[in-house]
Amino acid sequence: RKKLGEQLKAIAGIEFNEHLKRIMNKRHYMTYTDVYWLFLMGMPASFILRQIGIRARDAMRIDFTNAVEFYRTQFEVREKKR
Image (cartoon, rainbow, N blue to C red):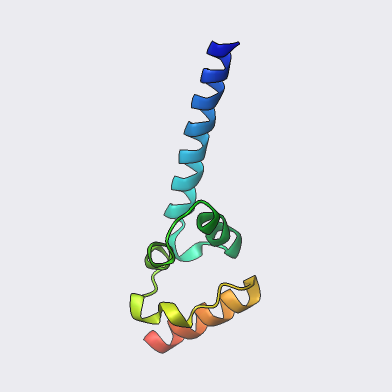
């Protein structure tokens, strides 16, 4: 039982790391669910915003309260960059 438990933990750890890599590789195409999951896993907001291409000085403009506000504010910040 102990050996099986250790094997299951190892598999779960590998799956977690693969899931994390998949999300981080999405970059600009991260969904609100992906961002929320990263927050739950303890990723700092500055790191997440850097991954989706938002500068640190624009970080205060992004609203993480719900998906609609997240996408709206992210779009506004991206439009101001142009």
